[in-house]
Image (cartoon, rainbow, N blue to C red):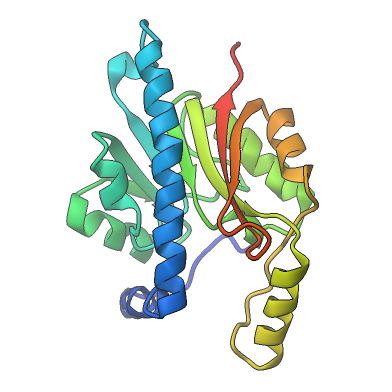
Length: 223
């Protein structure tokens, strides 16, 4: 994985216009939002049940990494959260903060995050892990997420799916996609998350049996 991004200002805006324009991607986005709302309702219930409250005196700080152009910034900010955007691309961070005014910084999760332990109540990382082909890199990122989170991590990953893998091969063969994504064996991501210091609160598929995307809600282990 590279340690820098070559996205330009115009490149970010072009990507934003194209990424979720098609009907299939709009359906994916809508389903993704449903899963995210379920995950954060669970976090809300857990937080309400904790009479002592979480860290930061009740402030709900969330790290969105990679934030991209800010697709989820309005959703996170709308939940009374203080959003901190982070990405390999400075132009992505700038774009994500334009509408909300959320602060941000360039950061590489594989190399280590420039934040103190427990800096954020929740770490939010969507569509990142399927770009990490090295198990050691996934372990390093999960370890960093566990270090900087005081309560939760909401992350996506791709679990091995024969149907989705075949579809991806066809898309690459006909030039529809140049991205080589990583799908991992069932149960492997959960083992890696637990080794990093998380409990598995929930793992939900985007479309069961059809799409490799899964959303994981991870709760930081006590102590």
